[in-house]
Each structure stands twice: as C-alpha cells, then as structure tokens.
Image 1 (tube, rainbow, N blue to C red):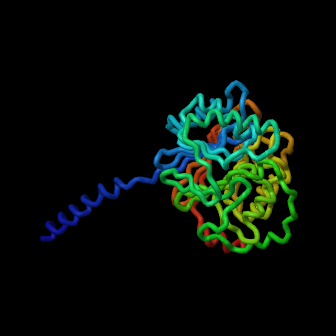
Image 2 (cartoon, rainbow, N blue to C red):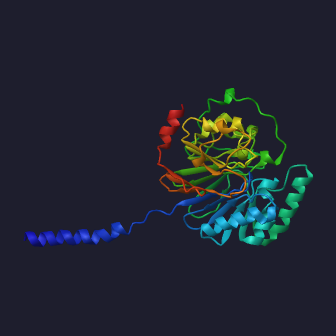
Image 3 (spheres, one colour):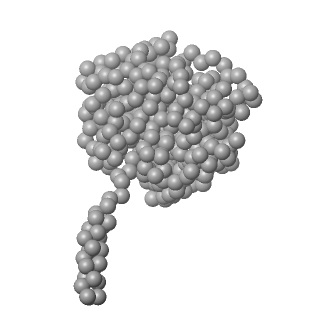
Length: 351
C-alpha cells in the first residue's frame, strides 16, 4: 500500500515536471542606442518581433548612419523596420531617411505633421522626407495617441508643440519643483515640437522626448507630473543645456539614464550634472566620451560606448516585463543588470 501511494505521488510529480520545465522566460524588449555621432537612432524590437526606430541620424558620411542602423537590425534578427518615428525635422534626426529607405524596408513612417520651422534647411529636409513617404504607410500622431506595436505600449506624450492633457495611469501628483524652476525662453524651432513617447513593457518604462526644450519639458510635469516615474531616461536633446530641466528629470525619477551624445555634440556639463545627480539615479551611460566637457563631466569608461569618433559602438538594453533590465556596452562587453523596483515606493521616496 505504501509503495503504491509513493508511485502515485511520483507519477503526479512527473506529470507536473514537464509543465514547470516548459515555462518560458518572457522575451525581452530590446533597445539599441546606435552611434550616429550625436544624432538620434534608437531601435526597439518588441517581444513579438515588431520593431520601431526613433529617428535616422545624419545624411551623408558615405551612408555611415544608414549602414549602422541596418547592422543593428541584422543583429536584432529583423529584415524590416515596422515603424520609423521622426521626432522632428532637424538634420541629425530626419536627415538619414532617404539613405535608410534604400537599405531596409520600412512599414510605416510616423511624425507630428508638417515642418513648422521657418528655415531653408528644415524645408529641404522635409522635402526629401516627403519624397520617401510614398514607399511606406504614413501616420501622423498627436498627444494621447498610441503607436500600435504588438507586445509593448507606445504612448505619444508630446507632438507638434502640444502635450497630453490627462495624466498617465498612476501619475498626476503635484510637482514641488515647479515654483523654483526658472522660466525658459520660448523656442520657435522644431525642437519644441518634438514627438515624445513613453514605451512600456509590463512594469518597465522608457521615455524618449526627442529634442524637446525646457519650456515644453516643464509643461509636461507642471503643475502636476503627467508622466510619473520611469526606469530608463534617454537624455533629451543629446544632453544639451537647452533641455534636461531639473524640474522634469527629478520628476521622472529615472533609475538609469543614457545620453546619446557625440564626441563634440551634447554632453554639456550643466545637463550632465542635472541628470547624473538626479535623486535615485543608479547609473548614467553615454554613447560617446564628451571630449569638450572634461573628465569631471564624463562617466567611467565602462559606461561609455565610444571613447573616440571612429568606433561606432552601441549600447543595448534588454528589458523584462517585471521591470528588470540589463545595459550592455558593445565596445567592451561590459554589462550591468538592474533589478525590478517598487514604483510606488520610489514615488513616495520623492515626496
């Protein structure tokens, strides 16, 4: 009798074991911060394989930026980019569109609508972009819209100079820094019209506001913080002083920040210090060593993808839906993993 009971118990365990062993770890959200020398090209591949590229880097340079984006796509195992999001009509963001479209198939271009900046350069860049648009679908978005990528949530926060009217879920708290934030000048360039997004995968949250400048940053978090906190913050405007206002950086309370600067673009000491010293920040990573800033305003070399202008290394983030993520440096294979956090506790710690 005892033997038969033991065999019955063992049989139940064996039946359960395949179910346990077959449980799979969720596929990550992968984010590639591609070196386009102080421009922007951020490639995201969701757990279901759909992809989104934010901006396309510079034109020219013998197809350098288009080649690097195509190489990242190959590493990510994709043969097309489902959505190419254009944050605004400046050369280091939209300039690479024609070259990229010749390299890899694009499903849909996403933008904030027509160019609003009164300059010959932006008009020429917009005209070149318009010539490429018939090769793909075209989606114009406004704040509050979503970009429909399977497996992740891509929420449009800002576009064409406007921002979301209602707070994101769990956000909306008063921001005590608003009263002390200096009034920034009005910005009539395309920077202020940047298409900004919040990317969510389970509990993981990543924000990219393009080149949004300080007055518009403040509008997003004052008098109430409409966004809430994030795990990963892409420094706005490549780490330039016209952006990265303390009032928004501290309100977002990022755990990790990545600066998509170049050797001689972005990475300015004031912005670097605001981000680096933000309460709760565990690490700041940089795409380039900022040569004009000096050693005191650069992070340790393990956290920098490119120590000079010739390398073309990238940073890669692999994020899980529990909020954990790993940042990996392709130059030296240095990686660091950040554990999940209690967002409610982090929000309370800020008060």
